[in-house]
Structures are given as structure tokens and as C-alpha cells.
Image 1 (cartoon, rainbow, N blue to C red):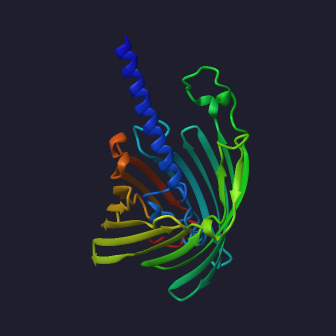
Image 2 (image 1 turned 45 degrees about the vertical axis):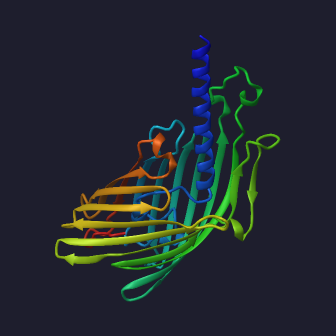
Image 3 (image 1 turned 90 degrees about the vertical axis):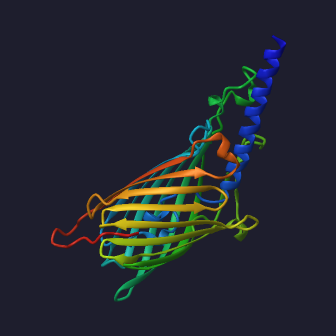
Length: 319
């Protein structure tokens, strides 16, 4: 019996150590916005200047299940809708994100607006973003070692926090480049506070800088290549990069691969079901120290571009 108790204690301590490591990793990752492998097909969450860049209204649904096999790992759902208005000189958009990490729940709503300088075959856009986030920690969902522990008998009250962001985005039919700061404030739930309070940090040192670029290369009539790069930087943290390459076969099948520094290798497949609708799936294989504890990450996207003019031909979108 004593041996069994010792084994049980060691197993619990091992689990606690893993969870502490995961929480620390999540806290570091939280220095940046939520990560998306298929960012290159919908950059609204990266850059508000992206809204209205399509010729027609467009909507995207995304579901991401990260680090499958780890209890409490991030699960994210997003919805975006944006459209060009005023002869494409303006772009307007809305987006929402629901994210669960352990017992932490976050619901975010954003409103985006962009002003566009139109050139004969390209455009330069300037975007602004307003954001409201509802954050809470549900301590009552935890299974504690000591039943009735007073620290976990009630949930943390919800906290609504505003935020803002801005960006620039240049693009034509075969190339794009953008730089942005999606959030200028750092909103943090502080479970170690006197009453598990929240706080907002202000200052340039908390700005998260994003740079994203990509190009479409026509290798032959039936094959196109789309290399893309995204860089993320914040003060006192290492620069992260997503390096990806997608190939489009006969304007129908997307196949791609990518690498996120210090985190994962990814494989992507997508189907251009029609010129208006695209379905995509990506799988991330973890290469960090979390590799031992999870079986990878799954991400699904569904995009649709609405046809507002029946007489207008819709061209296939590459980004």
C-alpha cells in the first residue's frame, strides 16, 4: 500500500510539473497574439488594414485545437467578415474570437476600418482597430487535491478590457506586405493578486509588431507557388518567424508546408471548391519540449467571398 501511495504521489507530482511547464509556456506565448498556421489566407487578426482588400465581402471561419492530448491546451474559434465600401476606398470589418486555455476563458470582439489609396494595379491601405475582451477564470472547474479549498470555491469575476491596434498593408494581384501592431495594450488576468484582479499595462515596450509578406509565382500554366513569411517581435522576447510555402495545382488544390521557429513544423492542404469558397486544413508537429506530451495541433478554415454583382467575374484569391 505504501509503495502504491508513493507511486501515486510521484505520478501526481509529474503531472503538476508538466502543467506548470505548460502554463509558463502559455504565458510566454501570450506575449504575442493567438497563433494561426493558415494566417496567410486571412490576416484580419494580424493587420486591421487587411479589411476590404477583396473585391467583394468575404467571411472566414476558423477552428484550432492546439497541443492535442494535453488537458486544458488552447482551443480557439474565430469568425471574420469584411467588405470594401465607397468604391473600394474604404474597408470595414468585424471579427470575434473565443479561446479556452485550461480554466481561462476569453471572448474578443473587434471592429476594423481601413482607408485605401488605389493605384492602377495595386493599393496601399491604412487600418485602425477597436477591441473589447471579456476574460474570466473558472476556478470551480478545477479538480483540487483538498476538497473545499477556499481558493477555488468561486470563479473570478468577468473583466471587460478595451484595446486598439493599427497597421499598413500594400498589395496587388500577386504580392502583399504589411506591418501592424494588433494591440497597443497588454491586458492580463492576475490570479496571484489580492482578489484575482486584472491589470492593463501601457507603453511602447508592450507593443507586438507583426510583419507579413508573400508572393505568388506562376511556375507554369497549372502550378503556382506562394512563399510567405511572418515575423513577430516584442521587446525583451526573441523574434518569432513563420516560414511557409504553398503550391496551387490547377487552381484547385493547395499543398504546403511551413516552420514556426522554436515551435512546430506544419503541413497544409486546401481545396478551392469554387472561386468563392475555400476549405483548408493544417497539422502542426511540435518540435519544442512539449513534443513528448501532445500529438500535434489541428486547424480548419472555411472562407467564402460573396458575389455582389452577378455580371462580374470573380477571380481566384491567393491571399
